[in-house]
Length: 152
Image (cartoon, rainbow, N blue to C red; front, side, top):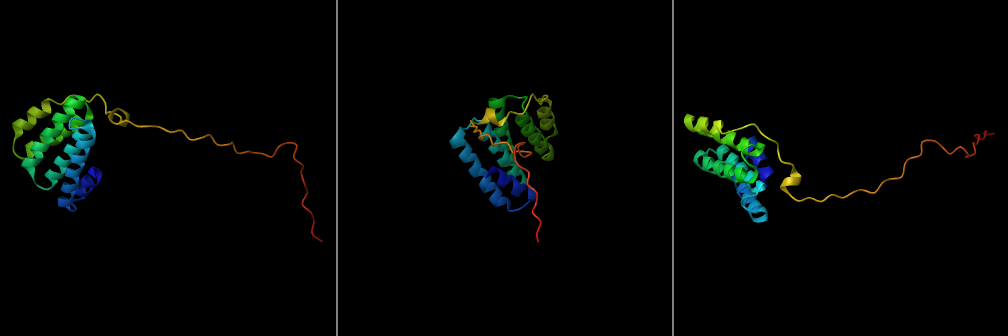
């Protein structure tokens, strides 16, 4: 749902539906992973982006702050997700005329350490496929060679 919501918002299509789906994604992630999990923080950040696209800047600011708080607690200040939402919040603050707030927030952004892998965010299982038989490249050396028969 989160992906669909951001897709609609990015295209400027049906922003009301995008907001509804983004809110549902937040609820689901909080129920499944907990409110302080990385996935929940990203879902909240996606909701903030949709709210901003809808022109609900005050709600978007509050929601971006919530996403940053969750991601800081889950990952720390120097991870890419935390930095991404800090930058989006700073851009929104600047857009709303709060240059000082934007500048202060941007000063807190460090160099990213790394982007966490999916493996560290969610539990996954891996399955292995059975090996296939090799495809023979030439007939065996003992195979008889037959000549094509001539038609009368």
